[in-house]
Image (cartoon, rainbow over all chains, first blue to last red; front, side, top):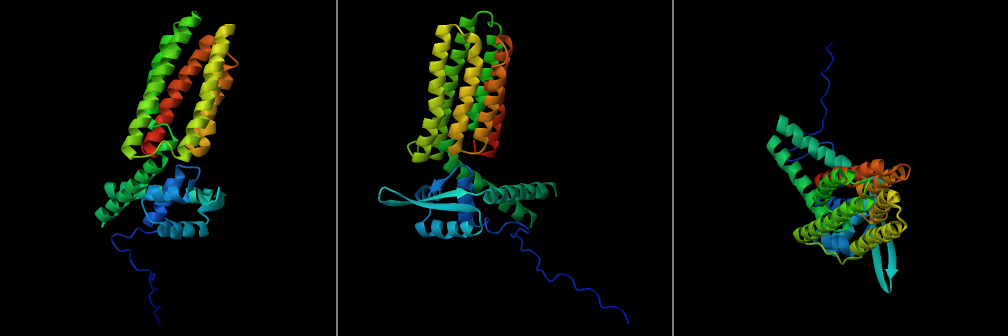
Length: 115
Length: 193
């Protein structure tokens, strides 16, 4: 009896604007912004990040938390006088993730230009 | 599909560069400014090399270059700040400028002391070491390439401490010329100007 043909992978083909094999965590715009801003600063406070990204308190806090959970950034809370201050810094893993993402985007541009 | 991917990737890169520019411009000397400072220093090193046997003139040539570099640095920082709309009075910017300027002020005073002692041969090492220190200390608040540049300046300074003026003038050219050009280009291309 003939063997049944092997099933092909069930993974769906990527949609036209979808980019396969890359870090989806930092692909989201606010998170990419946070990681990029921290890549050129040793650390930034919550308010500085909010000003750079021109976004809301809620947005910065939700997305920074996701990056923190992934180990891409560290968050240090302290008091400046009576005011609470939250300071964010990029970890080595976060920096590697951004570098990988940058390389991926540059490779995509090269490939589509050559092809 | 290729066009959509290309546009998407290009848009992401633009976004990253714009964000880095807005977030980082107040913490580093602009790359193109450093590049131009490097070019003037190479020219200066060539001129200064002719005067190594006339140390006062040799010193004057380098002081003119230092003044020119300060003007180029100040103008390009102001231009980049205006273009990106960043503040020079934020705590990060203040920390950067204080830790950057302190070793440079020390360098000016050390130069005066060495001049009074007639110790011209010790100047290249002092300049390279203190200028490197400015970038190592201020680089703690900036992009990683800044402290790396500082370390390279310090290594040249250490080498300059072991040689005499004709050779140490070449090391000055390698540092203030070569390192500025190389790192200026890296900062300009990778960190948005």
